[in-house]
Length: 420
Image (cartoon, rainbow, N blue to C red; front, top):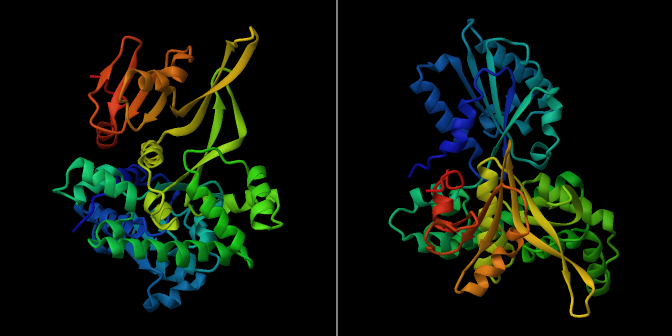
């Protein structure tokens, strides 16, 4: 079965001939090679590009071992540039080449070379890799399947059944294509331990990885909650009897971010218009991996739906923060008290902004009022949205707050732009 990745494919297409090295990054096994070697290659051929102008090299293939030498690879590509027409250079698993940055930089001034690369080890996945290309690297971040892409593959399921499977086993393409629940679980658990964590340990030379593994468990158990490195350190000291330091915890968190396992959402004081560095929230790029880490024991939909909404917003290109609204109330003793209210997400795209609350259910007026409390205390005119985790009818109340079901939100990429 073929999986369509139109969002990512269109982003690659829009970058053709831009004079930069297109660097396809993202979580291991999320479909980078498939995007480049199958979907993009097919697009080029449909546009009339012939074989001799598409240079495809899979550097993971042992038959191409000689091309892992940077000079051999450079000479091989040069030999394929036979005329002045644009040649599309597609390199998969480029991290197998030593000094690959120099090889790629060598084509920045070649006018008939359009370069696209993927890679999969911890070095290549580092958020700093773009800087190696002298400011001429153009990152195309690819994510696991969106819920819309997932639904196209799991055709025939109800939306409720599909969403339950999606937030439980995630959107890694290989997992989605596996029918057996037991096989899904085994694949995800092995992938997490023997691929992702192994990459991090190897690249960063972590010898005693018990603390790293325990930290992953803490983050997995805390999606939707605030994470403070200082408090985590205190827990390690008192409960785990570990002497791990706060800076080591922060460094480990950065390693997990670099490998695209998790993303950090900073808190933003909406009225004060400033960021609050700690504590912050972390979300998993793939919920199946998060659940596998906890042996599928903590699959409460409240937090998983929040993670799914966060991932969809990031996929659509929004920058996403966690909002905080300060409110002053008068207590029973007549004194003014300061209270901080939370907005699940503050989403920005250019000049547009949306404030979003995610509610698993709104069974009564009291729960609805609770979800609206923080939104009511925001005095600007930007869009305010409540995403409800069931088939909630879409409507806008008299205060301008848009209510929408999670299905409508996830399956309509224009859901935040269409108030009808």
